[in-house]
Each structure stands twice: as C-alpha cells, then as structure tokens.
Image 1 (tube, one colour):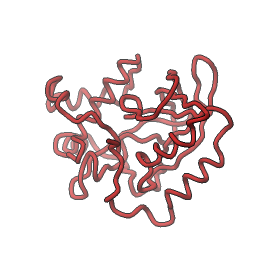
Image 2 (cartoon, one colour; image 1 turned 45 degrees about the horizontal axis):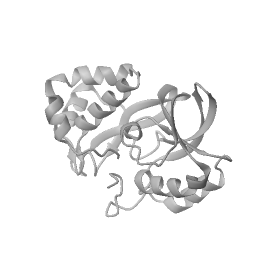
Image 3 (cartoon, rainbow, N blue to C red; image 1 turned 60 degrees about the vertical axis):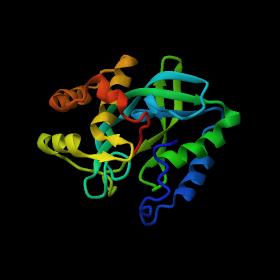
Image 4 (cartoon, rainbow, N blue to C red; image 1 turned 180 degrees about the vertical axis):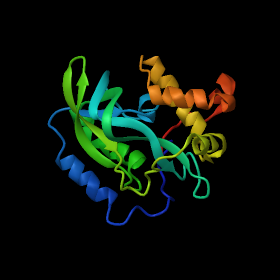
Length: 218
C-alpha cells in the first residue's frame, strides 16, 4: 500500500490540478529512461520499478525537514513533518533509473503517491552520479507553499517529534528511517544528524522502530 494515496484527503490547493501538472511533467520529460531523485522515503521505500540505483548529488537544492504532514505523519490538529527539497545548498541522495518502456506507467503511479494534493513543484534537475549527469525528476517545495513550515525552534521541533502521529506512524520514526537509510548508503547529513542527537531522549530504539509500519511518505 502506498503511504501517500490520500484519496480522502482535503482538496488540493486552489489553482494546482494534479492531473494537469502530471501531463505537463510527462510532456517535458527528457528522452530515454526515466530518472527519479530520492532524498527522503524514496530511498528506503521507493515503490518504483527500477533497473538501477546510483548515488547522486544535486546542487542548488537542500534536504530540509520543513514540510507539514497532516495525514501520514500527523493530523490536521497536530501536524507532523516530512522532508522537502528546497532551494539552496546541495543534497546527496539516490537516482533511480526506470526503463523507458515503463517510464510513463511508473511516473503515473509515483504521482499517486507524491502528488495527490499537488503540494510539490516537480522539476527535472541535473543529478551528478559516478557515471555522469542525468536529468532526474525531483519533488521540490516552494517557500510560498501552504505546506512550508518556515523556521521553527528546537523546542517546537522536539514537541512535534515527540507527539505527532499520523496513519503511518510518527514523525520521529520517519526521521529515524531516513537517517538510517542515508547512513546505509554512506551519507551523513549534518542537519539530520543534529536532529537525531536532539531527539535522542525520545528515540524508540531498534525494537520500537521495527514495529512501525514500513511505509513512508507525506
């Protein structure tokens, strides 16, 4: 089951139709195989049929825990947080290669997961990989989005990590899974590691973490 299949979620943002955005993205897709940049749960729960995974880095974008989650990792009354890709800095993650003959099918499935409410701004961005640069689809977030959290202090962050829970588990579990997945592929994200140290008193440990659902998005 895909975590972001929010069929019963609140309406998407006004003026942003997910289907129109999908057709535009399909129309602007680079020729050949489909590449998707993963920076959060797409690393540990890709749900995309792919033939290859490469370590990848994008410049001009950063991973940040600044996106509200009102269904999967929180509620409308007590929103949780998930990672977003926002302008500035650089970000290490993975590039997933989907063979050309499956590209449209997989992209449409991915859209159901990531874009049911048209929260993100999908972009084709250059990803540096050991084998060269590929143009990959990345789900980015604009500061003007209603889902952008803005700056929060550590006390607020700790409160969310400790209390926010949605239909697929807690914000804390989501953050822990992402940190572990990044470490497994040799990536140390300084801000994420800082959050993990900050959250240490609330961490569930390996047993508690393993009991959470294996799914991951918004």
